[in-house]
Length: 237
Image (tube, rainbow, N blue to C red):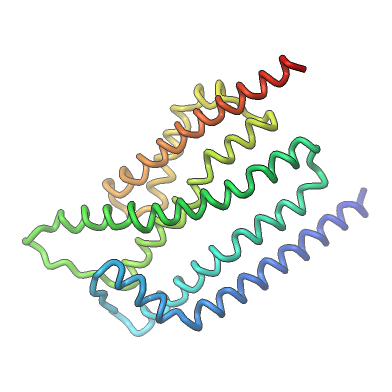
């Protein structure tokens, strides 16, 4: 038993080391072109940013390089996670995971794009419009990119929620009845999550909570579809 635990710990350490090395490699590659990434993001948003201190721009560069490294490493980390847990899964669970893996990665990309091209500019425009002509609007580079990352990355991961729900329904861990009963609790937790990943204002939290609630409802709908299909297979057999 102790030997098996030691083997698992060694395998986990080796896979984690591979992921960390790849993350560092992606980070160095992204940092080498971070000025172009910065210019691309600013040009897309058409805003003029202000730097308040000599270390602000360095912080922004590190955050941008780290974000791109995280996005690039995520599929590889997911693959190593699968290879690590697959021996402990049943044949049905392995098939299910492999079936939903491409959808999981696709959902993450769609979520990041949704956050960047739809959620972020609309939230930014709405918050800026509140100032009107009475205030001079000025964005610091540090706050601007912190706001951008807080909206785009979490929504990318949360877009995977319906796919995760489908997988868990397929392997019998959850079912649509449980999800429906837990709706109020889920909404409460999603509301707390939206306040944690957005800037400290009510409007941003509400604008984040709405797509999260829609994702949860989509998860219930997809769970019902998977559950009905499972029931038909059981009846047929």
